[in-house]
Image (cartoon, rainbow over all chains, first blue to last red; front, side, top):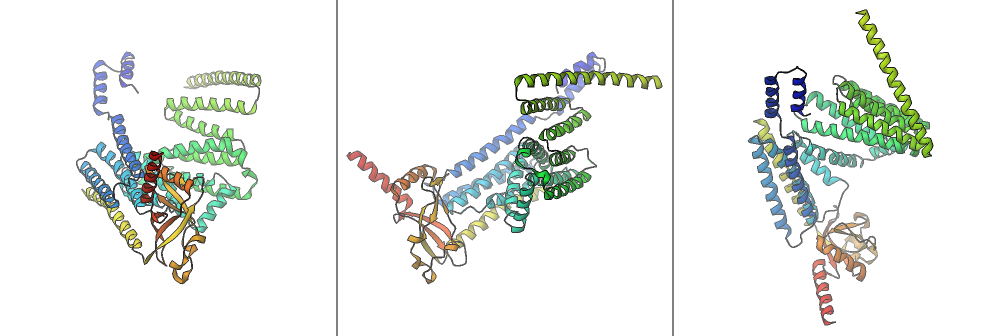
Length: 368
Length: 146
């Protein structure tokens, strides 16, 4: 939001005096944080760390293994000391950046040891090792970059690790056999529960992780909605399988539990996942699923005065309807006519709604 | 104040983990004895994946007398092994292995009770680096004499 523009509008409307306007502008300028430079600094450290991983991957044979290990340990040690100093001196931006760099260097170190000793890959073990080492550092993150990278890596590693157990592997297999989206939704559910728990009990401590979880939940939900919408219906006929109904019931129950858990907070995520499950499992029409998700987001945006989000949702709803016509009406003439008639119907509905609203308002005034 | 020390501990922990890991690897490498296993390309068309050679044991051509009871413990070894190479040598070596098909072997640190660990890659009985240098030199001298 451009605060100067807004203040000018309010001054014109007589809501603020000139002095008040100037005070607001100067307050906003003094208290606003340089988010862009903050994010870019951390990102720059992330790039340096990635570069380090890439250099290690090149496998420099001219340097002896002992020297390679010693140099990498010295670099890692220097980074750790710098990170600690940045933390105790309260230099938040530098600290976050160095933490990202330190985590990337840890990954590079694992790769380096693996290369030097010619270790054979064992599933996602290196990633699990890295996740375990980085996990306590997540508690110190205030911005979500490191947690946002850590989350998918650790989830992938953990999923691989637990899938090594025969019983769990059979359980996962049976879920995906009978209900292709089950595993994705189960994972989404787990993330959502963790998100809710953090929001209730540890919002101040795990702020970075919470933001990262929010980001991934939104991305994954959108991803699942798209996949289930366009491919789910064609690929799997889940509606005739009794076991799918059981799996659906289980997931629904789990989501309801998560919903109750998050009830005390105004949160969009859980109802969205719930509706996604309902629509995706009961209504055999992918189009309805996307529409249901978009309508829920639109309602949330409207209730919270987030008009940009509302506009995006309305645009996406329009786009999805257009795609539906493309999917079902094969001729351009037919599609064009269907779109025109839909637009006219929509205009009529809006006109009717405005009229009804005016009548209701008039009646209410009359009663008062 | 407490968080300051907690951070210090969490920053030191990875070093301890790495040190412990390297110590375990070194201990495994000082195994009872080394064994040499004949290897062949997992897929001759694409021997190289990334910067490692993917090779599988060729038990028919391996000398089993180096094992206990002179029996090759096939089940103790994996179906295929990676051998990590420097980026600049990898492509050249891959090309040469495909063209010349020299005798390729891997040296493993072997113990009866643990997983064998890769130690070296031998090509025609020499360390792969020496073999590559020698081969490149002979190739260069052939080209100059022509």
